[in-house]
Image (tube, each protein chain N blue to C red):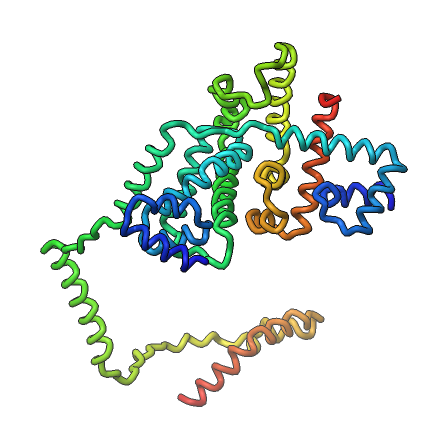
Length: 214
Length: 171
């Protein structure tokens, strides 16, 4: 599959404009192969596929949007440098999330040593009000809109309140839709630990949210 | 199934990862136990809220910044490394160091071992003390019942007297 995609990309490379289209249709493995074969545009395809997902994952883990963007960039720089060392028998997405997870963990560790940065996190993002609120719709009444916005903020705060290990597993499962096995690989835990952490995180989350959902 | 087991397996139950048998047991327990049934409902509803959280979008400058960082990163990777050329002074110091070490090594290897000669020991014989045993005072103490003190004195000076006697024989 990957070799076939490589040939297609190589063939399209001679004709020019459809390379991006082919890369868009190829799976991750083929895109990685194309990049390692010298097709620089393949890297851009990987960036486009994962930038938003990684941003959301890192943001939900560390709670600081600007820093999350920096860390996503750091992930791609590492991917660019070390892609030749990537074990292609594994999923590219798992590898990218593992890098992101490690960077997020380092960030949280550094913050715990620096109370000033921790305070910034508690304050939250400055452009909070500018972001689109997808919970809302234009047909809702103002009080409904207020309630939904309040609920969204509450959900975000509750996720942020979960202990680090539980939060990471929770975000990977509930927001990124990763399988238990992938989460185990990304977080470098065994499957039993993932199940246990997810169970605890869900229970803790539900306990905080419960009074607001009736 | 009891409540504890229900809570332990709840994540798998929600994610449809239980076996058919376990799922039936879980469902049956939730039907019978209002507390666990409530727990199940609350967890499922709260998870719906999480799944509906808005997606955070990248800032417009993201791509531009990433390109700049990648360029800087690759430039540092392919930057030519110039060979270090030592100055004359560095070269002279290094050469002197090498010569000194060579001299020390050669000195150690070429040195012929000589037999060990000890310095002569100069010793003088101490003046012999006159024996107290033959004095009139000593003799006088014996019949007066003071035999202990002379005995101690004789014992303490015995070694000296043996040596003195040997030295006298050698002379």
